[in-house]
Length: 385
Image 1 (cartoon, one colour):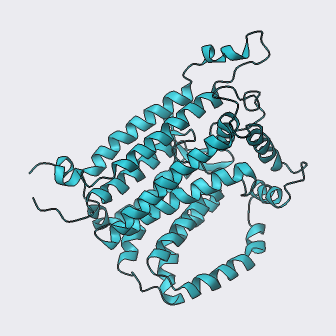
Image 2 (spheres, one colour; image 1 turned 120 degrees about the horizontal axis):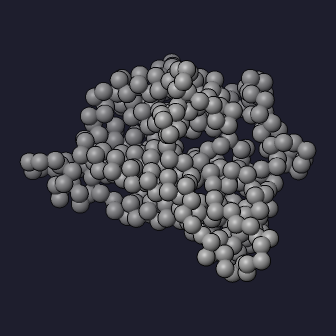
Image 3 (cartoon, rainbow, N blue to C red; image 1 turned 90 degrees about the horizontal axis):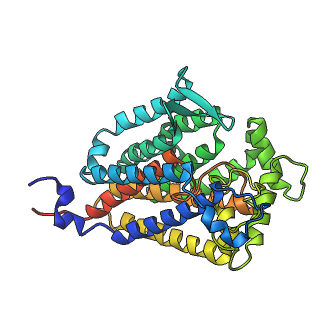
């Protein structure tokens, strides 16, 4: 019979529109990364219109393209595996995901980046362990919730899911990586919401959570408290966390409706905008493509999320549906958080913009997530051979 991946009866079920949308977002991202990393001296005597002649493929662009190719190859392998096989080893996946987060503490392997011990270094390659761990968490938590579907009616019913999730949150907060911890929390909530959690519990939990924020704030690291202080006091330029956001809003606003044109942004090219190829990549897009370009990207993301929700509804079983929902909430939060922080409506957390921000491990993880969604899409109904 051969590998089912190549069977036409399965391949016809794949949502090729989803693939096209992702490719469009990725191409847009590569163009913006190229502009963000190819900083050109605007004080020289060359005419500004000749800036295109100086454009070269930067190291970041090369890595991004290589990561996309690697991710595409991984997707092909993922499509050949029935996703229910992951459910059969969900306990192993769960343990390995936690061990992966712990690996950052191994001497000579774990490294600190941006004040957080969230990375492992394998030769020339740096890997953010939380990126891979969140997919392992989704695959294992979906199987855990499958047998508890529509049985999350009381606080007692939630003890298990909370204990299942707690090790990931604790380890990420210890690194400290608040942004990734928030992503895990959103994924957990989204999957439990679809699994039928009692909404009264959600309401009471939300009230308790908001009430406990002052206590939670005291346990945060200094730089994390500074970011929250800056978010709550956006007009105070003396707060160190406000510099990035102020520069980002200025950069976005300078693009106006139509933008200044690709490779013609001036604010980010003068290096006013920090970490412009990763955390604040949307500000670069806003300056060069304006409100229209930003709107187009948001439209592409909306189609992207809608298609995944549709795939979740059409999944052949609860396990597949929960996997897609977990991935959908993961992407949705990252999109909202990243774009929101560039505009000052969300705190700065370092969450990347999917398929757009520079980062090899982040992009490959996003591609693997896409592969899982396509896997469930192609097996949305039982096929007879």
